[in-house]
Length: 355
Ligand code: ATP
Ligand code: MG
Image 1: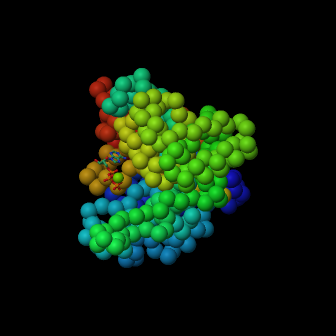
Image 2: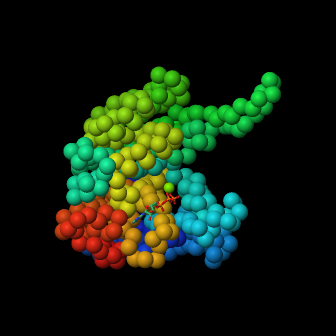
Image 3: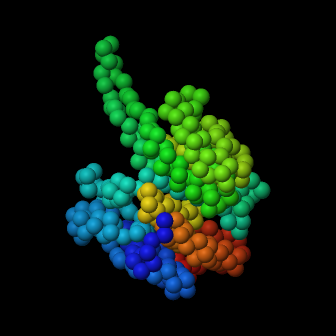
C-alpha cells in the first residue's frame, strides 16, 4: 500500500463549478499536513470535465490521463454544469470521471457515512439514531449487473420486446473487492457485513462463499452476511450497528446513497475509488453544485476529508489522516459552519474561512 516516500505524486483535478473553490482549501490542508508529517508528497495539476472540454475539446485529455496513470493518487473536485449540458454525449464532462475510473481500474468504491455529533440536528432522523454514526460502505464499481453481458432490449417470438441484463461476478472479482473490504475493516472497528441476495440470486451465493473463504485470512475481522432488503431496513432503523459493509455494484449504489442521506449533510462526505494496489481517486460525494458556484459559500469539508482518506488508503499515513479528521471535529466544536450546515447560534463562515 504505502509507496516510496521519495516519489509520492498527487494529481489534483479541480474540475468545474465549486470544484476549484473547495479543492483550493483541500490543497491548503494537504500542504499543511505534508509539512507537519514530512509526507514527501508532490502536487501536480490537471484539467478534467468541462474545464478540459473548454481547453482541449475533451473531458479527459491525453495529458490528464497520462498524469493520472503516473501518479499515486488523484484528488478530484467535481465535474459538470449547465454550460456543457448541450454538448454531444461523448464529450460530456461526466465522461472524464468514468474514463478515469475505467482507465485506472478503480474497482473499489469506499463511501463513509459519518455524522459528526455536532451536526446531528441536520439529519431528518432522530438524533439518538444517527448522532456519531460512522460507517463505511465498500461498493464494487466495475462489474456486476451494470456491466454484465449479454444485455439489451430484444424482440421476442410473440412480437413484444424484453429488456435484459446479466448479474455476474467471477470469484476473482469478488475476492479483490472482498480483500479491500476486509483490509478497511481491519483499519476500523473490525466488523464486516457482506450484503447479498443469496436467497434468490445464484451470483450472490458464490459471492457469499468467496467472502466466507476470505474470512479465514482475516481472523481479526468478524464477518456477517445480510440480505439486501434487510440491510436497507436496518440502515434506516439502526444504522449504528454497522462498521463496514461490502456489496456489489447495484446494491452498493443504492445503499450508499441511502446511508449518505442518513447524515443529512452532503457537503461533509468524502469518497475513495481504489485499484488493487491502493492507488486511488478521492473526491467528495457531492456534485459541482452550479447553483452556488463562484459565491465562496460551498462547504470544503467533504473534499478536505477526501484528503484524509487519501492519506489513509493510498499512503498508509493513518496519523496524518486522523489529524485532519480531528481538526474537522475541533472546527465544528468551535461553532464554525458553512451555509449548508448552518444552524442557530453558530458562526457562519465562507469556503475559505472554513479551509
Ligand atoms: P451531480 O449530478 O454532479 O451528482 P447533483 O445534481 O446531484 O450533482 P450536487 O451538485 O451534488 O447535485 O448538489 C446538490 C445540492 O447540494 C445543490 O443544491 C448544491 O448547492 C448542494 N451542495 C452540493 N455540494 C455542496 C457543498 N460542498 N457545499 C454546499 N452545498 C452543496
Ligand atoms: Mg447526484
